[in-house]
Image (cartoon, rainbow, N blue to C red; front, top):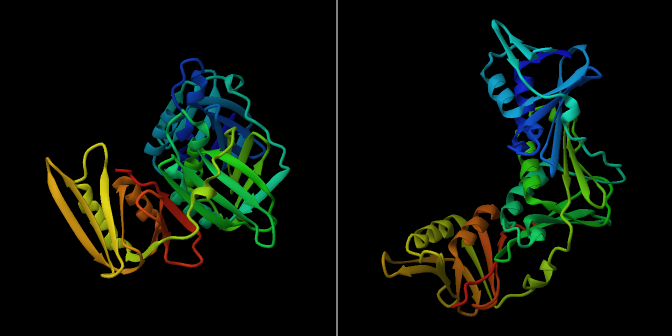
Length: 376
């Protein structure tokens, strides 16, 4: 194997694929990145058996071949090299790396030790606009559960709907809060329901954020899937992940269709009020009390703790319906306020024991964030 490319391209490619590697006692090769030189390119691949990622680095091929080296060590070293040409050559001693006056040998393992990467028959396929998907992932994935007691909640539900306006509903919940957003699809649509691991969605979000190749050549993010696997392709990067088995909760049934009280408030002012109340919330409960008064057109945010004190902030807004009091976890509310995005936010309340819904003040923004109340 003999290959030459720029330091910038190699460093960027390694940074894309190296994050999913990690220490594995029984399979130490999973800490490595597979370098495969063929067809005029260098293909970098990594896997942790749950996910696999690959990307292409363009350069000059002298000799085809393949080898694996520790991904983190290789990336850390390449980032220290000066910009310019980097030469890679496989010898009996290992992988020789040459750049200017620097010469290094990396010890690795034979490519035959690397797990076979899954191949998917691309039958079911859809294309999602990259900017819309990147924003959607940032507004949904954080709400997924981290508890392994219910594996289906550790993923993002993706409901693909065909029709005149094909779309995908992305939703995540940990049973205490729920985030859902609808994204339109490019070109044709299809009907299917997938549960994609939240970690895979986080990696996909990172790819969309850090990808620096000629994005003008891409046509969005392509999803191809089978019954148990999904491959997401964006430019020269490919992410393959297992899908989560099981059924996602019928979450649409718990989203209130109407409210007894609604409020239109400044998101910035509400964020500050919640942050202030969080300083005096009771440890372990994280409780903050919201009181809506339509007659005065106000929303009050308060908290109290015997050890630290108490606080109350009253915000002016457009409040309609009935007076109501509800107690919420300030961490969940803060996450939702950050995800909504618009300067004005719509709040919907049924009563003190029903879910509270936050939505952006924009008709074309189909985002819903729901928080379950703390029952006194």
